[in-house]
Image (tube, rainbow, N blue to C red):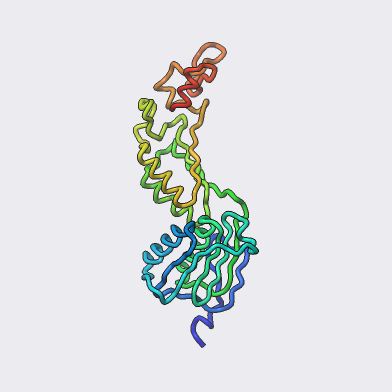
Length: 256
């Protein structure tokens, strides 16, 4: 009896799949080639091959991980992030979209990180909810672009697919502006850095949702543009509110 046969396999991944029918034993990678005949899944195959190499698993033909689309009769073909994984001497991942293939390969990597192997059997899953979000308030407190770029893969690894990036509040305006440089906080993310963050999020199948609070919560911005403040009933300006009854204030908001 092998050591693997004496161990009761557990599927160790976050989130847990909806179905895990384990048959006993483990797939232990030695030299792995990741293949696909689907052009839409090619980037995910290359990503997994790179990630396996980073874990010390070299390329080779001793074991195969195959990414393919499901058959028309398979239910996972109906859901964007759905997938199935069959683990035997090789691994076959079935997903109809790159997002589904990405979710499936995370499951494989989680098991390798947790126990150095992947339990044999079949796993099927689809997200319980279509949007799983993370909100970062980078307006009240500055977060550097490098820190955000390190955060995004961590979020994607556990299934987050929406990144809400809050950039403007009373305390600060944290993204560069080509039109109104005077409103930008000293500590901010540049436009070039923001593009890198947007590209990284897209590569990880994360929707980037920028958030700029207005017409209220604009204290920092309006400190530099006091003429655009809303007036209270007694005529005194409200230091954090934009006067959206004025065309120039609305135009400022659109461009800012």
